[in-house]
Amino acid sequence: MSSLIAKNISMSFANSQHSMNVLDDISLELVEGQSIGIIGSSGCGKTTLLQILAGLETPVTGSIYYDNVNLSESNKVQFHKMRSSLFGFVYQFHYLLEDLTLLENCELSFQIMGSKSHAVNRQSIFTIFEELGIFHLKDNYPFMLSGGERQRAAIARAVAHKPTFLLMDEPTGNLDSDNAGIIQELTINLSKKFNMGILVATHDMDYANKLDEVYRIENGKLQKLDHE
Ligand SMILES: Nc1ncnc2c1ncn2[C@@H]1O[C@H](COP(=O)(O)OP(=O)(O)O)[C@@H](O)[C@H]1O
Ligand SMILES: [Mg+2]
Image 1 (cartoon, helix red, strand yellow):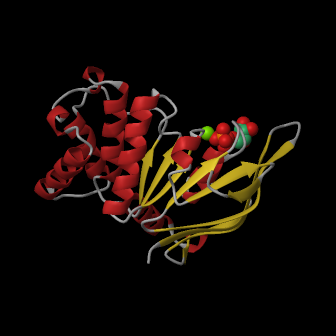
Image 2: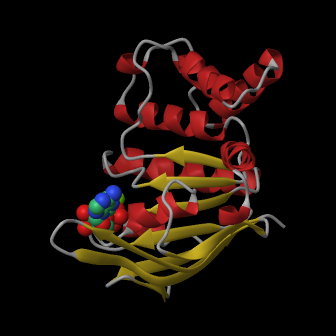
Image 3: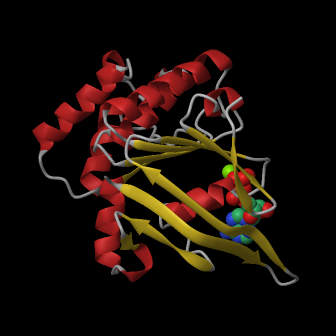
């Protein structure tokens, strides 16, 4: 079973005056098909933890393992290949390119990953578009869509290559409650259908409570919560 494991992660940021500890000896495991929510007040370290899990930031101490491979011991080429196929990312803002259609936005992300099989890629994108209810919008540009539709397109782009893990940083933070509800449901369904591990940093307790496990970051520590 595929797993993403953080072991004893500590992180601090230093400026010229002082060093600030953000994460203090945090361990976490996410397996395929599982959903985890990370909550905590602004500035507590949610984004930092996601960045470290995805190998975008290097922790001060601790290690990240993808399928038991220690990230810090893999070479750069291996690591980039592994990272782009293993992960999908969704942020609070959709970051779609405005001069490309939804379909082109998704195809571009396949191209960046070095995938050559155009027909297969297109089929995967169409399947995800159907799943997310945006197939009819595939030739539209992002400015023609509502906020909720744009966020669904960002999710389609993140998962079209069938990553093992989907990391989402406040994906509903910019949406009204109806659209937030749609995104909650769609991402949880995707996780089940494609056996994807999903990790969501969120302020939305309604969302967090629908996930398999919920953790809070407070004073650098990660604490598991009981579902409400
Ligand atoms: N690259 C960085 N350099 C310096 N400080 C940072 C950096 N990234 C995050 N921080 C600081 O670390 C703390 C945690 O930030 P962040 O992980 O973005 O919190 P959250 O996502 O929970 O709001 C904040 O105080 C933030 O200012
Ligand atoms: Mg954040």
